Image 1 (cartoon, rainbow, N blue to C red):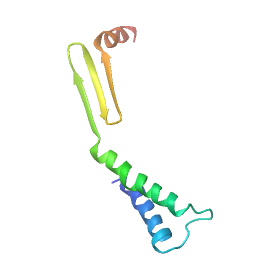
Image 2 (image 1 turned 90 degrees about the vertical axis):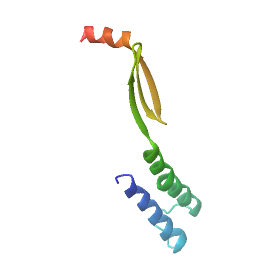
Image 3 (image 1 turned 60 degrees about the vertical axis):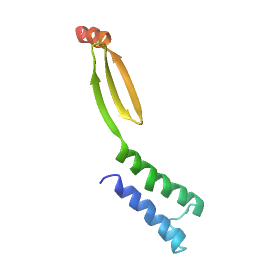
Length: 87
């Protein structure tokens, strides 16, 4: 729900500026810029959050932490054991 508010805001700005022909703000963006921002913040970022997948996999050799499609990290258990002894 949190990521829907910026999407609605940018779609509203796009509607007012392009659909109604009224500029928004003191220094309005071009119509092309408004459409690009509406597509990025109105479609791409919400889609990223919708399709994001988090996971932790523990094997005998490593721990794999992922937040797909943003990152995936493998950590060897040897490193975790060594850092645990230091703390």
